Length: 187
Image (tube, rainbow, N blue to C red):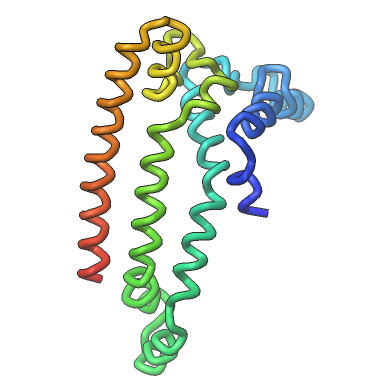
């Protein structure tokens, strides 16, 4: 159930959430029926659109993170918790000194994967807001690269920006990966 949004395409997720969050969509209709006179414009308000889009992306990827953390939790030896309980450690101490350090690889995988997927976000922006509302408030780098290359017919500039984005994402991912791997070793 948690993993279903992960396997759905970004377009399908976007169409579903767009129908729910438009000004006359399911959510605002429900809010009207509950007595809210002026429900927010989840996708039409420039102050809310980016947060709404972030929430949709989070909803779509939470299943992936849950599966990775569950796999990490299954790798925590039960014997360590039993020994800590015998030594008088409470639930917080067991989590802090046993579970959390042993979840370091799962945290590393999730952080790097979410970082990379954030930079490649295009589908949801295109379908839900087309980069708007207003002055490109939900535009991402990947969205701008594709819009510049295909719509603006500036393929050279678009390719250059895509290469710079690739180098930037690779550099940031490498730094984050090294920092988190160092935490794994120290944990």
